Image 1: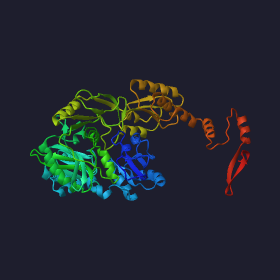
Image 2: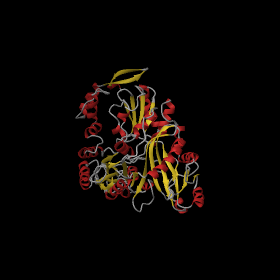
Image 3: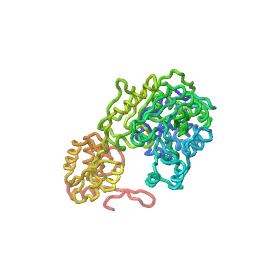
Length: 571
């Protein structure tokens, strides 16, 4: 176990991953420590079985929701001794929780110059390393004014963007008018000169006081004719790879930068993911830095190829312990990785995904299963078109394998298809905003005229009188192209939706549940069976039997600050 000083204290972990980016059960003794996980429905599968509490929230970025959901665990197990978040998107919430509970780990002030792009550039410039020209702007005139001096194109960035989100390259003043990022005094942007140079990233561990632990320099690999260089190409729909560099001269230049920049950004121990431009003259220029392990496959290749778990290092640091690590030797093998974007925005359904693990291909891959639905997430390389890990003996060898995989990998997806039974047009508008293909079944005379524009297909049936016809219509559609869910917000649609979701194994309310809530007699029988809110009920076949049953019932009435039993005839 990596962390030894926690004992049986309460630890809170924020997790949004479904894959094994972090091996939490190995980092902390879950039998001794009281560990509460705050996660999402997507990330719940990655929570170790030894967790003391599991709290599911809709959005980990919502501090108020996370704090409210944590309240029962805090009451049960006490204030958390440590709050751990290994994904950068969750750092701000984790820092706020640490401040509230006086927990171990970095506070907001410690992270500000890593999470705010403008503060980051200012801090990097203070270390003395070369930094691109940049400026904080609050309107379009600020961008065009900066470009007048720096030249077009320019790059604009949201202050808190993650994984190339909130980053745009603008080629002219006309492009500023089309900018799709908020820009005003309350939402400033960083505008930066565009450097058309190759981009490298360096991943490693600073042990504190300027002492470097293990680190690796990597060159980003872009497809021939890429729209731009480096990781930004991924956000523009192109595959992006990287390969570790084995050139001694380039490694020596990178080390010079690291020995100045890394302790200059923080003298404390920290795991870093640094991105640098490399000019034609061989000079490294600062681009960005994260106080965290690199994303995507970087933690995996470090664990698999180099035997160092960067996530374990970060977990230990956030729990107040410094990992015991030595620098790598000169004979370290070379690793590489590749990330391929989806061919359409998520959510989408996978039609084809070709495995590349064979021969000189990757030693491991994470590709979506055919028939699965890729969920929509933010700021993560987990749910993408494909992730591939490579290793070899030289940069040239591994780079060639990465680029071959990028050229040969085949991924085909289609929009998620759902069936909707009845309901209002607002539900269809929400589905359209998510990019879903919708087949609607509705009453012929109650269907909003806008439905045809929002749906792939509109079918008509009397939802009340023809429930079997509704089922048959959707069965035929499902046979042509499968649905991922049958949805309804209407009473007549509940049973057909439940029948079809059960038939196709799509989840949702069961047929039994729907029958129980639609049939009052069945509902009362079930409540009586489980001893919940029992009350006298009876089934009556005729008015006379109803009257006879009614006169024999009793009820309760509130009067004079107490309940009294009364005969039903008194009501």
